[in-house]
Amino acid sequence: MSLYVAKGSPDLDISCTELESLLFEALGKLGERRHVLAVPPDLTRRESRAGELTRYAYDYYGSRLEAVLPALGTHAAMSPSQLTLMFGNMPFELFRVHHWRVDAETLGEVPATFVREQSEGKLNYSWPVQVNRLIRRGGFDLVLSLGQVVPHEISGMANYNKNILIGTGGRESINRSHYLGAVYGMERIMGRAENPVRCVLNYASDHFLREIPIVYALTVVGGSLSGNTRLRGLFIGDDVECFHRAAELSVAVNLEMLDRPIRKAVVYLDPQEYKSTWLGNKAVYRTRMALADGANLIILAPGVKEFGEDPGIDGLIRKYGYRGTARTLASVEANRDLANDLSAAAHLIHGSSEGRFSITWCPAHLSSEEVEGVGFAYGDLRTMLARYDPAKLQPGKNAVDGEEIFFIANPGLGLWAYRGRF
Image (cartoon, rainbow, N blue to C red; front, side):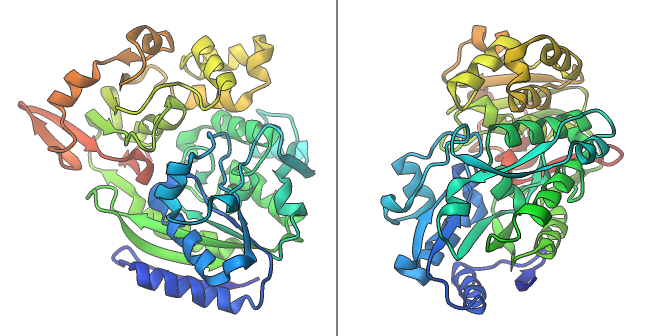
């Protein structure tokens, strides 16, 4: 087990040139590799710098980098324009699409006894260890897993083995991991490297991924409060130490700890990245521990046009709505369709305020009837943009016509909490 590169601090600013040099340094330590697969995140992690790292890996290996498999999880496939936006001028024929419902194979399972222990007795199922068939059967002598470590609502901290086991996972592994995190409680998980979901993933890695030559290149990107992102760290290795180093730095640069709770928050969702509430509810996940009881969360969503990333999940969200934990758990017990798609059930829990604060969605392409039908309040986007202009607001506290608001330009870059709640 090796740590090839470990460079990072809250004040560091790694340039593009240095990023390339550090990656090349690490790849040189691996020795000759002839058949390489890169597994980066998709456009929802555009700020991760994984697009650049993938391009640098292609520059290093040339034709030996034989495929790129974006770790889509349940997200929609990337379009050619999105691929270019994130990865630059790499050949489109290199890219493969992970179809999460059909493309995964099962390598083994984490026992139900272990899952039950991690869930504090709330769940009684095993966890299938599933990855895209290409990872195991593609004949690769290097699987280069790339991405950002940042607070996350399902796994506590994003990336490391999550990128492989959930990002290229199958229907049951994604469903059951999401549901485990939701039932355990995302406010007990977010921003914590060790938690029940991560313990299940680590068990799977230790028992079933050892024969796959995976090397992780993990970034830490800061600047969520200032609005200007900076690469604060790069950690490259093949074991959990790489992740722990990155997670420690991420807590230092991505967690915004506030002295008092927010009464009104305004969150902007970049239309190039956020097309659905499935993705856009990061505005809810990442701010909930900073919001006061009775607070108002306003989500400006000029690109959002749907609830789910595919028709099946979209239909479940429309049917059951964001109604809180108790009602969602009851719906799972009573309805086969929701019980068969536990990742959707988990998302409904994550996207609810549990009645503690109000959520006003302002999408460009969903009607008030649609938004209110899933349990949110509706706001007219044009009116809200005129009042809360993202181009004029500064990240953090602002005064708008005598009203204090807290503005967040990209919820995917951090986690906000106030002291006493985290």
